[in-house]
Amino acid sequence: MIGGLGCYMVLLVVGVPETPAGYLGLRQSISALSNYIILPSFVLVAASGILAMVVHEPFINKGWVWLKAMTGILLFEATLGIVGSKASVAKQKAEEILAGTAEIGALDTLLAQERATLAIVMAIAVANVILGVWRPRRITPDFSWEKEEKAKAAASPAPLISD
Image (cartoon, rainbow, N blue to C red):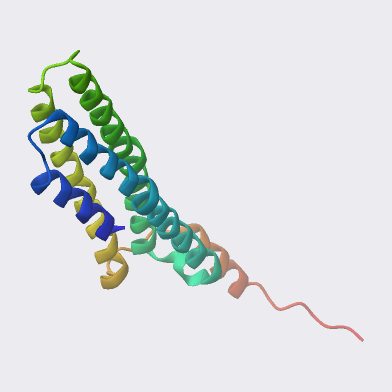
């Protein structure tokens, strides 16, 4: 996923052509990259994270896992809501410029906003990977209700087994 976002960033930084027709081609490339690499990669990332929590029960009690899940939700919102919509809005704007109904200067503003948004999405994705590798031990959720239940179970006498 980070590789797909990196490709997107490279296309935005170095691949911006001078003509509206060339820009439309760039937008189509970014749209294909989003549809065939970034979004499917995100689905795999999210599914594998949820599956890891389900299969490996101790993960449920780890604070870093919940923090990683929250950054995953942010990543989901950013990927679908921002990256996808920015790509489609810019593609539509390029089509309008090509048709002569919009000015070419509108692309500069869109590109600047898109680069900034993509940088934030990249930062969240990298933070998510760092959490998965580093696994900080100091982030612990307060499952005091679980501790109380375990203490009650330990304090209660074991049931008598009768013949």
